[in-house]
Length: 168
Image 1 (spheres, rainbow, N blue to C red):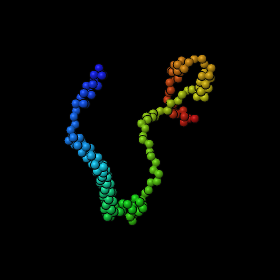
Image 2 (cartoon, helix red, strand yellow):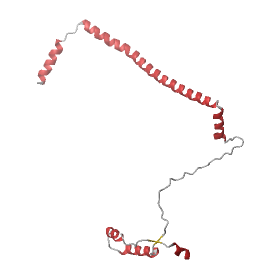
Image 3 (cartoon, rainbow, N blue to C red):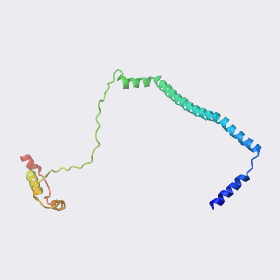
C-alpha cells in the first residue's frame, strides 16, 4: 500500500513540467519578498514607535492640563484662604481654631441589653472551683459524660435584693 502511494506521488511529481517563464516568475516573487522584508520590518517598527510617542504626548498633555487646573484654583482667593487654614493653621481675626491631634476611633455601639435587677448566686465560687478541679482530676468519666452531667446542675439564679446590699 505504501509502495503504491509513493509510486503515485512520484508519478505526479514527474508529470509536473515547469517552463522557464514559471521559474522566472517564482524567482522574481522570492527576490521581491527578500527586498521588501527589511523595508516592511522598518515600517512596522516605526508605526510602533509612533504609537508609543502619541501615548507619551497624551500623558504629558494630561499632566499639563492638571497643572493648569491647579494654577486656576490658586487664582481664587477663597481657595487660597482655605489652603492657608489647612496647611498653615491660619485663622481670620475673631476666629478660634480647634485642631484634633491623633483622633481616636470610637467603636460602634454594641446592642447589649442589661437588666435593672442584680442577680446573686448562693454558691461560693472558690469552693466550686476547687471541687471542679478535684473532680476533673480524679474522675474516670469521658468528656461526653462530663458535659452531659454538667448541664442543668446549677440552681437558677435569683435577683439580689438591693436592700440587703445597702444594709451591709
